[in-house]
Length: 229
Image (tube, rainbow, N blue to C red; front, side):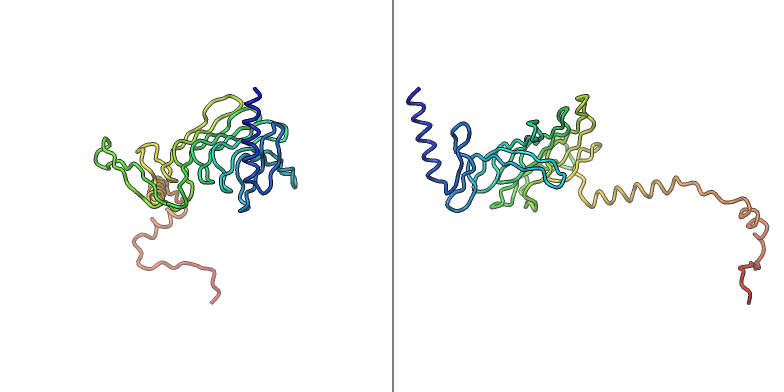
């Protein structure tokens, strides 16, 4: 037991030696370390008070070179869990869960890209054969994007309200199971508008119908337009 305490003491002293500023937590661990390059490192506990009516919260997790890394947890000031998020390179990556006082309300899925290498390899299905999948290297514009299945819950009943699927920020059509790009979405909206227009039934007033029938064979029709000259 004594050797274990000595080991933790040495590890704590080594961590502190790399920190310009830090605090010692209730469990005698080093928290809120800022290194000599003014970058946040290691375990952090952040307290955000109530401001202008917005509820405060606390969050805890690990910083690596001033960027969030791994699992971060957020709590209300009453101690209830609000979110469990995962990060890589400072961006959301993987599953992120959000809660209210009754339970989980939403599960998100994200994919982060290394800012130092903004390229990613994705699976691309063959348009002519669903059984074939190709690997394609693409340049990624955003540092993190919706990727995977998003699930929305009724937290009080514990039931699923709806699900949405994404591939690198593009929503997947639930019917074709293929990503909907911006142009595809616009085309789909235009097609829907056109289809709706075809189903519109034009209602013509009875007086107009009688007028057109009465004057159908006349070459010139005198119309009173209210003019006085």
